[in-house]
Structures are given as structure tokens and as C-alpha cells.
Length: 62
Image (spheres, rainbow, N blue to C red):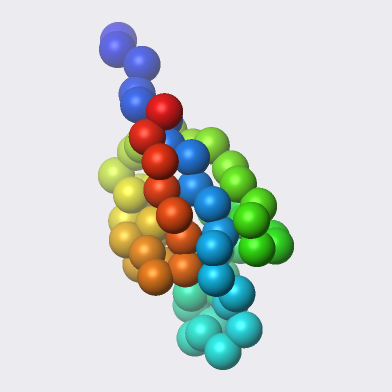
């Protein structure tokens, strides 16, 4: 089985003023403060979460 690509997700904008669903998505991704970063496998579920909050995060392929 081939290893999945990984992506680095960085929170670049605050969740203050966003809808509660976006806040929960950011929290579920493991992001807490601005400039915090996490690395996840590039699964369809993670990509969907990133797409939902794309205006708040920066994504880099690793």
C-alpha cells in the first residue's frame, strides 16, 4: 500500500466572528492559535475539512 501524501495546515486568520461550524472544523483539525500548524494525511475527509475553512488556513504539500 502506497503511503498517502501529507499536508501541512496552518491557521492564518482568527476564528473570531466565524460561524460555529467553522470553529468546530478548525478545532477538529487540531489548530488552536494563529500560526499553529499540524500535519495530516491528505485523505478525502481532511481535504473536505480544509476546503470548508480555506479562507482561514494555508495548506502546503509535504
